[in-house]
Image 1: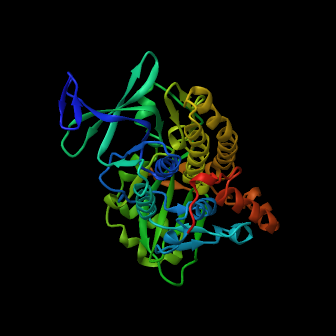
Image 2: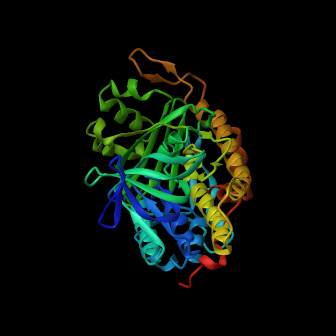
Image 3: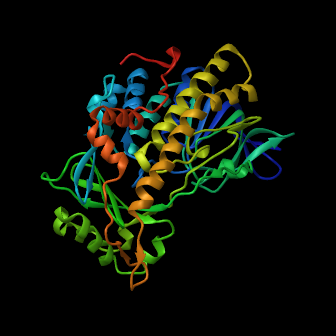
Length: 437
């Protein structure tokens, strides 16, 4: 090895980044930045590696749930977040052939935040990144794409990454690596870990359509036999999710985009001619839906949280909220160990999974029920004369039983709102991580 400036160049040509860090967090999403900020406030030397140059990517999850809003208050970031341009979602409605039903009423939530905030995710991430950079122990490195782990005698000792600015390779050593890099986690793949998959009956086509003042507010789900569309109110536009049967994207895209426009117009006639905003398939992004969970979220020197440990279905839009709750629990458990000088050993890492496993399993079970009882039923279709053409069987479209029960029992609408906006086990920032506003 030879020294090159502040770094050491190994015989293989990789830069070894000094000094050794307490924790290396892979992935600069909401969970990774919440964890990095919290551990830095515990006094841990923490580096967050984010493979992109910035956070500006479309069709990310832009919902900030009530429990996350309360967390931002606890971290002293509530006022800064409130200053961001945002929309509030207070109710979720489903539009069926028989009429419109309210299925979740967030105004019934406990606590100071009785809504979900709709904010571009990059604004939230920049807010968290700025807060982290105020902590001396926090280091955020952008354009750093992790592709392998440093493993010695079965223990993870760090990561290797490529600087996407100049293509140079680096090795970062750490006492602990935490994977927060999503459902396609490079860290999980490098560790040879394979989650158990529960399957999903659908994939999602994402796109934007213009919104006008006379449109419904909040979140609207349009369900009809053979068709399901979810629209999220973003002020001057709708963020739209058109649900297709699993693997149905190729057949749909083999047809002119006019086919999609016609289907939208048939189930959402109040959109009028706004579907013409879809000028081609380049305006539509595919989300391949997966639902899975690792049996073990850790090994020596490695912890996985969020979608890296348990990919969620978009049903309920709760994936980001669960990932953030994982990060808060990990902050408390790992931060307490750092503050008291205890090792970040496997026993400590397993405490994170024990804390977060049952709320994850509960939500995934609810999503699987939703897949069978609502989505698979709504997508039950016959093949039409053209490839990918969907036609609804006659006599279908009856109001699903769960929706009928919710509609008749307003208190259950509050419970549904709590499961979505707060979750079954909300986490709170430890006292040592809190700041005044």
